[in-house]
Image 1 (spheres, rainbow, N blue to C red):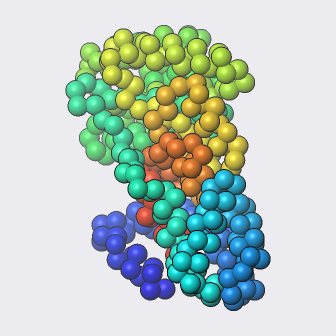
Image 2 (cartoon, rainbow, N blue to C red):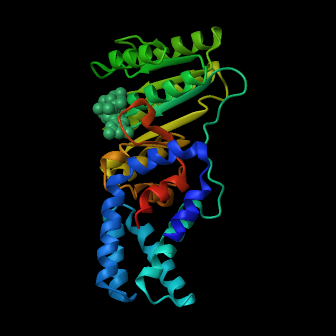
Length: 322
Ligand SMILES: Nc1nc2c(ncn2[C@@H]2O[C@H](COP(=O)(O)OP(=O)(O)OP(=O)(O)O)[C@@H](O)[C@H]2O)c(=O)[nH]1
Ligand SMILES: [Mg+2]
């Protein structure tokens, strides 16, 4: 209790709404997690090897990832020894503390979007089918529009039926220009779009791509081509390549991240549908197994449900009932 009041006071008044969004989006993960730890702690009043075995299982079930969990348990055991902790209740604070350490790990966590200081900022969205790329573009456009930005969306997904219409709909809703060309090569649509974006001084260009990963070489070639076209217009672009992952796919999402990392230079991850899973621990696995910063999280289907990722609000959302 004391810990969480301390925690809560860290957030400023104007962050209240933001804290509530994380809190709500992580409800499923939290209730599962906190329940299980509650049951565990009433079963074992004292910390023991059996206690750690069961804790390990609970953590793995929340998709934190096996390696991460092993290291985590090792560190907990060391602290238990060093700090002479015997009661399982006293271990709670240490668990939360160590979760922070996994994520922050003495590094400065950069989750800000790298905006260009001159000319359009180009953000490329990649990821497999149905993870939420197009929806994320819509949600980000809605944020940017509210900030007064001139936005262009480019329909680099010329593959799936209905993909262009979906983007056009988001374009209308967020006052963004949509550039598309059905039956064209994605990179030639990107060419048309970027030319216009530079000529007409757009602030941000959001590029949607098709979500295919059956053939790594093809995808690599396609993304290479798109990147070359982008670089022709704006040498230091794309300023961000965001990989979109669906949190409900758990460890599968982690292997997608590993594959995409080999294909192209991913600068950040958007983790969608956290609201739809009890396995929100995936954020920590991404950090440890992939080491690409999570820049945004999807905490629901509405426009305002996409949030800039914040580790403190995330941890608070996970444990506030503990
Ligand atoms: N609950 C929830 N649903 C989401 C979130 N993000 C996206 N969705 C839903 O996920 C579904 C797929 O989203 P799309 O944006 O079409 O996914 P995509 O990656 O563009 O899919 P393809 O173009 O087919 O590759 C839609 O029904 C979205 O409403 C989220 O954060 N939470
Ligand atoms: Mg799409």
